[in-house]
Image (cartoon, rainbow, N blue to C red; front, side):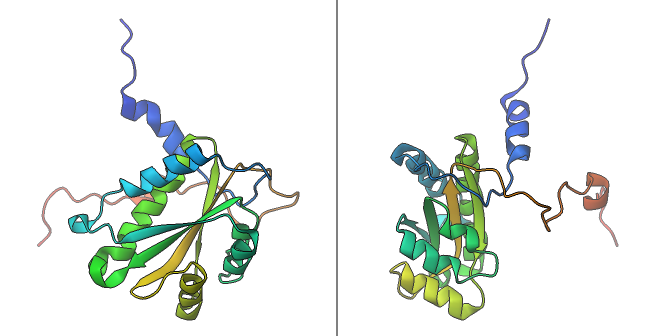
Length: 183
């Protein structure tokens, strides 16, 4: 008798196939697709359920271009039909606030991927760029934008060789196991 794969096993290929997409078509992201992405962010777990985030949806081309200028690797924000900026309240969110925001970003990226959309995170550094991104997104302290996600229908990358390596290190190089306490 054949046993059907468990839901976790059947989802693994989807989880491991997600890759950052930096090139997008002009096709708009449907409101329902965007809502699903935002719901995935909203339902992300956070330390002590603080939910130290707010999501700013940016469809304006001019604003996306401004945000794209604030990070060394943020250029893809200018060409995506939608950008989601993550405002984080670090004071109320505690030391876990940025970690929790990263969890929300990853959930939103996975939700986009599950719908056939592409996404890519961008970070705003140094601090002055994060402050400027916050102002551009209409957020005031204690809210701060350090991360934004480009979301859209993926387009093929331009011809040429990418400077970004592909593939993943094998688990044997990434994992150390401790079975008994070390003294």
